[in-house]
Image (tube, rainbow, N blue to C red):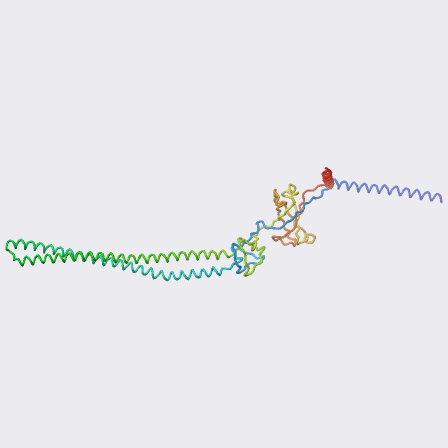
Length: 388
């Protein structure tokens, strides 16, 4: 019995010593592995964005109302495809239409007046020309009669003078000489009457021409006034049509309607109000904003992951991104970062403009020891600054 007990005690002591050695070896192995991981492993250090949004390469165009007005019709739907120049919203143009109708009625009235007026001017012009020719012929005839009468009067005067000489020589009776003198005087009086008639005909012709020319000038002035009014009316109608065209709010580019204001017929818009936003076609990119502490640590070429708010990443996954451009100045305390996105054909996430989310960028890969040392250094700086 004592011998068996001693052997049992010895076996127990031997087994306990071997277990301790195995435990120490396993612990040393685990410690070595942990230390190797602690100093040699590389873990990613990430920076999360304050905000992020999927956008097309070109900025969306905001469509603004060019002037105040009442909405007459709305021709757009959210998400609809539109072409450049398509009418999106039509403002009320009824007052302008009525004014155009008034101007066109006046134009028609002017056209009805101008035609007969031009015809009258043409007729009076022909009458004036014909009257001038007739008067010229009449004056010429009067001058011819005057010349004939002057020739006859001169002949009678010569005969009377010859009769006076012959009467002195006793060759002609006194009665004959008196008759010839009377004939000469009568012919001279007739010639003077013809001269006065020719002068009177010339004056009357000039007076008649002046009256007709004055009437023609009046008609020309009236026609010019109507023509000027016609031009003014046409210019006014053209301006009114341009104003009507301004009241058609058109899409500035081709694309998809990404946003619309709540409008209906009868609504009132003011100049500068944003009534819609048209998103142009193009490749999608990610526009993210990071805190200022990211300056200098985010660089082009770094990889990131995009998580969309509407599609939980635990269910839908994330999208791969690459930093393209980084702003060097802060705007409202944030840094703008543009990233290219690589769509995953197998992903159920719809790639469309405007989806919000967040981006996580892998800043660097360092060992856990480095992270611990950096954290310790920050704690020391903070405490040192608080103690100072």
